[in-house]
Image (cartoon, rainbow, N blue to C red; front, side, top):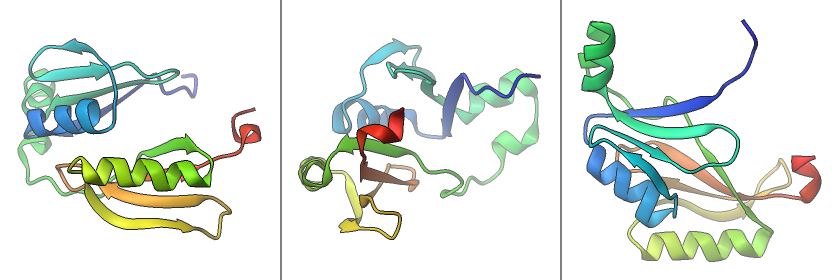
Length: 134
């Protein structure tokens, strides 16, 4: 097997608030909406949300019906320079996104803020330098 990730799918029991979070609050364009599966435009790795019931039906594995916890993963959203972190954080929080921690310069030399999605998963908004993506 080649070590490549082509799709990241977030599983949820309540897809509509998650769809609104990623499309309306964070600005991801919906490119496919099947009701129980939503895929967003994202350069590079495909990005989607899907109900846990769909995965149960596909696999028959009972783990998809067990109590779901949060904080099993984190997404990191690059937004530009340090001032952009402040601006984006203020915009998304004003739009109803749950704030976790306001923008702060971190030991890893990036200004970072933390927010939560409707399922309670904590994600970061961070500053970057062009060489980060070379």
